[in-house]
Image 1 (tube, rainbow, N blue to C red):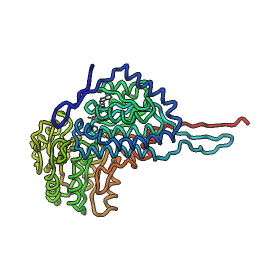
Image 2 (cartoon, helix red, strand yellow):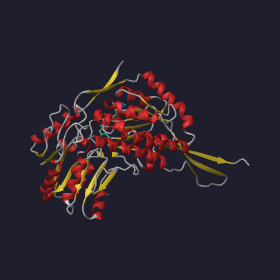
Image 3 (cartoon, helix red, strand yellow):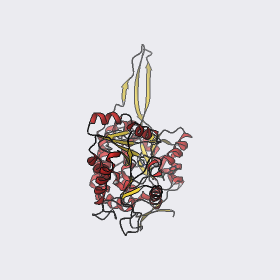
Length: 456
Ligand code: NAD
């Protein structure tokens, strides 16, 4: 039996194994999902009742899911609990959402028209490892509520926890409506290219997003792509620098910085960099790096060796080019896993790979600036457009700066403030399509027009 082996990123011990789905089994799963779509699409009230039940099940069974999420992904138990909480909120939002299934078209002499919003069919949900439960549910909940059936393909290193969640939900849902397949890129590709898949919803790297878009193009399958990010935080001249530094130091290291919308660099007025760095360093001095299952741990390990090595290489390169590590930089623990302390770096600019590439780790560079227009040009020139934040005491002035940033979400005096009620997604190389809010449900609907000319 070919199996995926999950490794605990803190201890490097085996967490468990999951059999890899064969192409034949995948075909059976997609055909089954397509068969049951016919019934599932018919009763919206019934579906929304089940979305409520799914929300309650996740809440009630949180303690079964959290230890597995911690062991397999590496995050802290508190972060894992938060991930299940927000996943339950996604189902509750889907249960409460109210969208028009149909609206009348504009009148014309001798005919009337109905504009309908109907589900697409079977959706492939291809998901990464950083928030395996939340990012899976962010697809399942709106897709099912809208009347689609779903086949999930989790990242291979977090298969156990996503499998567990899908089994919990499948106990509530009609047979075949929600299924899961396991494997690496081959199985992902086979799912995306299956002729009965009517939509692909992908969250992951920009690199794989491009492949998925090409694969889906063969059968003109619509895609939603939630891709990489490299979020800037812009601290304005009038900002309360201490507040900005404290807040950014909290959000930058959530999930060990492995968050698509983590703040990934701060632009700070030159005269305020010292104060910003001092407060930021004080804030992270209280961090305890360790195994996420230890209640004292405030930040877990990076998820895998490649990720750990990549971030270290970016850090080493920055130091070799003259950057200063203000705080952190070590492993922070004797445990054998992929650890790196929360790390603050200054003396860098936009030409450093640490700043320009998607780092996806717990290193935070601070860039001094004198001209805000130059900062905005640089920010808007970058390939990503997922999130950004602006910090200042004058809300109107900060909002005016926010409106000059090309990104799917721009937050003022907060960062990564993703809410299930608000549409979330990227522009440029960060992707397209939205999750959350009503836009997130509409992403799983298509338009059909019935135009009637009466013979009588
Ligand atoms: P990844 O792109 O390597 O993998 C994501 C998923 O795609 C996995 O399930 C993988 O098995 C599958 N896959 C890989 N190759 C495939 C192929 N050719 N065909 C079909 N499926 C394939 O991403 P990752 O390393 O797991 O996650 C980290 C990335 O995810 C980062 O770039 C991060 O920014 C991004 N991300 C984006 C968001 C967002 O909402 N925009 C959220 C979280 C993470």
